[in-house]
Length: 145
Image (spheres, rainbow, N blue to C red):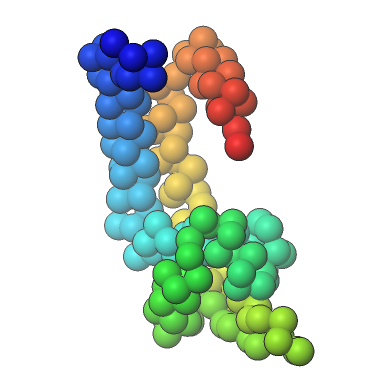
């Protein structure tokens, strides 16, 4: 076997890791969506606007922070704008577009945050031991970009 190949046990671990993340993430998103009507993308945009930009960010900065391409974000923002969650304002001198959270968006985010927190605790944090937390923290630190 080539040193770069993944053996059966390693592939099983990889698939378990992916499956666990997808299940937990899916449960958190499902609970949030059912209670607030926000999608994962909606929450991501609103949360980043509030956390990274004090309520506003250049559209390109927002796209970069979400690791989304410009087109995907633009289409998503159009849908959010129609629902009154955000506004887009052109900036002077070809500096792009600024995305601003509205009062409706702030309210939706504030409604979602406790639901997301409870779901994260229920489906993830409450299931971890202290050793699990140390292992996850170590892995996350070793695999940072």
